[in-house]
Image (tube, rainbow, N blue to C red; front, side, top):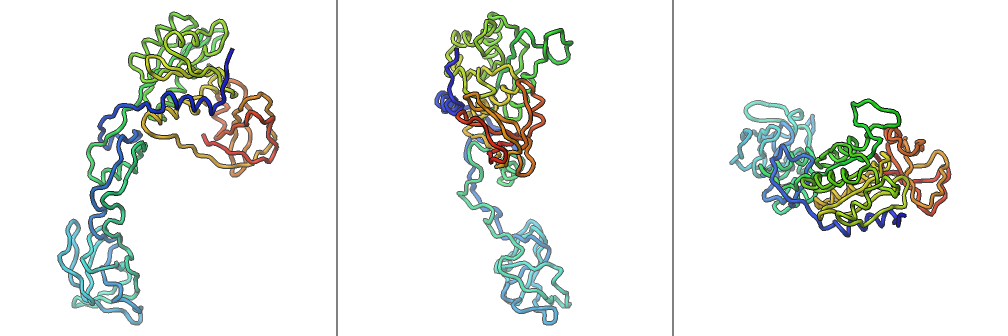
Length: 400
């Protein structure tokens, strides 16, 4: 029999057992670091940009020189020089002067604004007429406006995206301290399972969980180590689990998590390690196991692919983030139910929905039909103490 706990209790137990566990670190080149988690805070040690720079092609000016100018009455300034790309002008701009500066180049000292070349007329002999006034700071980026020395650029635990790589390149970094990608072994067990590409015999079904979990792991920044399907034979499963744990940081076994005659997994985990949770008050996902073998986190996920999918998101993914000193980020929004939903299971229930604007349209689902998840773009939980929700009721949708 199960001794069930709530989903929040299971998450607390998981955090208590493994919340301080961290992955080792390694150095990665910026071009290889996307999708990895930072192992240190990245702190700026310089001004970015390192000089006042223009965002337009035009003339650097002292903005007060253009006060009140217009097309009928232009301000006349004398060109004092030009700013080539990649250099810093040595001239200090004086009142009555202007300085040509292309986009991205440095402004001369004394200038406090840029005027686009479209608003400037060449009067000859080095004199230029300005027909539009500008405010101080117009069309320019000030020194250190992006970053100052000591600024936190990216925090430890941040999962790096392409924009982050660009920021690190801007800082001149060639090596980045990241957490190693966790290796997660996946074993699907069951006499009825058949791998993709093999013919289905009467009564057999294809193994959905191995490729699905491998894809989820890849999406979460982990390395999936897939194994052959293991029949419902205790010795074979024990050997497969021990073999997988040699190289894996985490082990996931799907199927065999219940208490039937063919369900060997619970007793095997107790033999090889210990069980912290066996049974969660949620539908789908009740027979989920959380344990530890050889000091490594272990998850026994239900063979039901829908249950395995949701238990991965609820338990495995948060642990993967925690190992890299990070947290899961869930996109959520409120929406109105388009029809009433009943629930009398005495446990939380996952309800799939298709979110359209502020409307949540429940997606009919039956146990094990993973295709229903593909038809949904979000889900919500009915609390275990509710017998259902009324049409039009507001619910918090977690986006898929």
